[in-house]
Length: 166
Picture 1: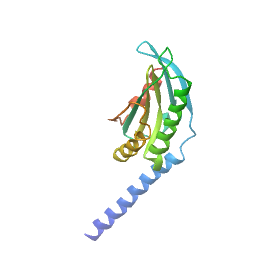
Picture 2: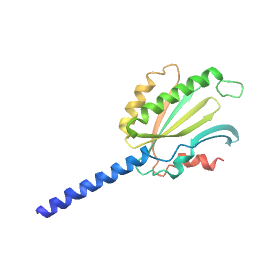
Picture 3: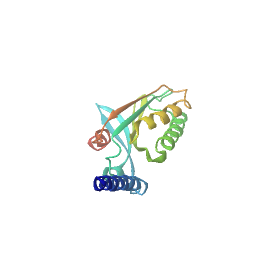
Picture 4: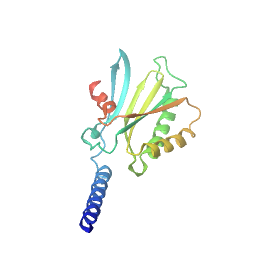
């Protein structure tokens, strides 16, 4: 009986070490490699920006996608944000990234900018905690119509769409 208990304790400790090692992998992951491109999505011009370094990132801890959608308030004739709104969106993105990636709970994968809206894509290892953080950030940016959704995406299909759209 003591042997089984000891074996279970050793196994539990080893599993914790593996999880910690995986988290350390995030902290020391390869340098970011952001790519921005204009692509065609359903026949319309769309701008994508994504961290290409995440292609070789160990994704198994980050199985849930959080997609945050911001509707533009003022846009140019093509439906994209003007310079003033673009600056606000950068600030919003910085705030989202700082909040959601804190404690390595989420990874920022990229953005997709359609006419009249932008999607921010994050992958989370702790979806409930990430949603609480997101909701507190939403309270800071009340001037925008913002929606978000969470999706199971253990294969990172939304992220892989960046490659398929090129």
